Amino acid sequence: MDKILQMLQLQNQLNDSTNGEEWVKGTTKNGKTINWKRCIYMECAEMIDSFSWKHWKSIYQEPDWDNLQIEVVDVWHFIMSLGIENYNKNLKGGIEDLAISISSQENFAKIDTGSTRFATQKDVIEKVENIIRLVLDKDDFNLDMLINEFFDIVMMSGLNLQTLYRLYVGKNILNQIRQDNGYKDGSYIKVWAGEEDNVVMKRVWEENENIKPDALYKELTKIYLALNKN
Image (cartoon, rainbow, N blue to C red; front, side, top):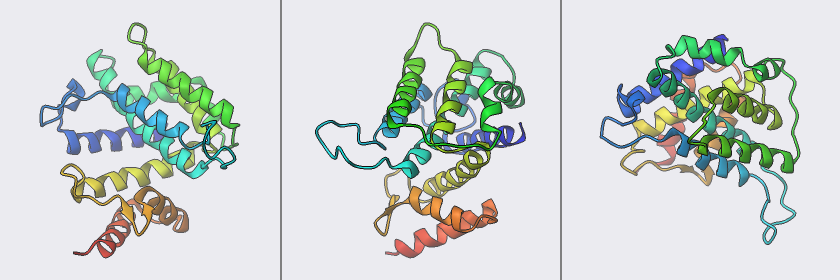
């Protein structure tokens, strides 16, 4: 449960700093409507694009598992945000209560075991599309079912709790760097020397397994500024 709680706390802090502390009420500090469900299904579409699903183009292209894992982490940002908002709006409790609930889900025990595998393209896409159906259900939305289905995707994409946590922390830090360097006004440059910032973050994390989050922030900021000097 500790890692789940830490991720929820980090996500809450990121949302507070990015959107203002009233984001749980559905609007940003700038008055823009927040729709976490839309965020989830749009990122799910990007998950599917990790595969050569098109029958008319690049039909023999291998799955991009690295990209799929990044997209899984992106969806996790939004599921946690949706969960925090849901608990707040429905008076279910705070972040600690949500962490307890998530950790008690059936599929949480599976991702906590440490075993991982890559599923088939067909199975992953079917699971992702089921997540899309769940978030589009306006009449009978089930947060627990969504979280269980998401944990299936975690396992099917070759991740477990530890690697999900590491990638989440890395992406959380990258999101902070984006915000600190003009992401909202459009001046942030997402491609670093021909590579997406996600890819650079993942590589730095993997090459420096013992790096602390604050040191990762400094290292990524250093790389970004060196590549994007005026």
